[in-house]
Length: 309
Image (cartoon, rainbow, N blue to C red; front, side):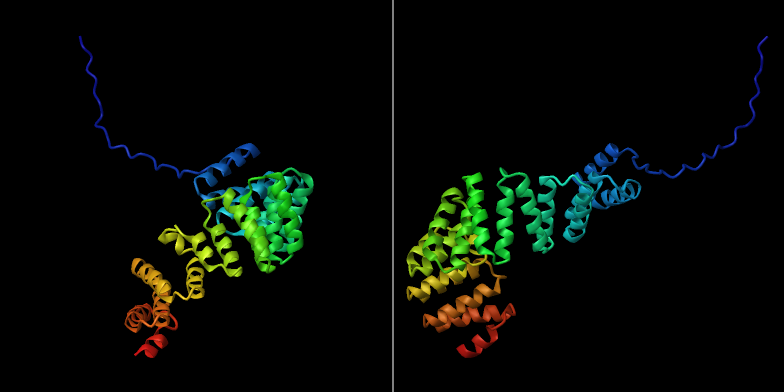
């Protein structure tokens, strides 16, 4: 005989509330560093900062934590805070060449040139085969107007790395500042030989040629630049100056007008076009571009327009 099984009417079961997820922070140093690295790689700077801040509170003498903490602030574009962490890392030690170099780069970005110079010098003393330290030290010295020491370090950098175009280009810049256009031209040509695609070295070469009263050669050095490259700082003004020296204001006006037509929101191009057309005696065209510049609220445009009426 079968057995009847009676079941009680079921009642609805209400699930227990899910406990909040608590993110466990890693405890071991390697795990912390790996997690911080992952956060930095993914651009999660705030998470990396929180993790490392907490870790440093518990491990105040771990140099690697301060180094990663500094890198977080670099990622957040806070060089002052980054440099503070590098200082702490260096105080703990060891003071390696790489760490001194990183501290120097960050100090330079923070505008602390004296400290940057010290760190790059220390890095250079520890690793005499690394071209970066003398190059970066020289760039700081240029900012400090310490040209003699800068030149020594730039030449040292070229001995350590023969294809270092930036060193020769910087030497050319220094020579221009020292009013030695002939030497500047030699260095600029060397920089261009090593880095033929660099617009900056072409500009430096052209500036040297203009100083040597060779405006056509300066224009030739800048020939072939596309429209976007001509917008880089210093290019268009130099081209205009060279046309002025050649007594070709109409050519300068035509170039500025073409650039203004191409980049209609760049009011300064319209203003320069108007000025060059005025010099060329083309009052109608000058007025057209002065009106454009005035519409774009460029300083000086209204005064020029009044003069052209």
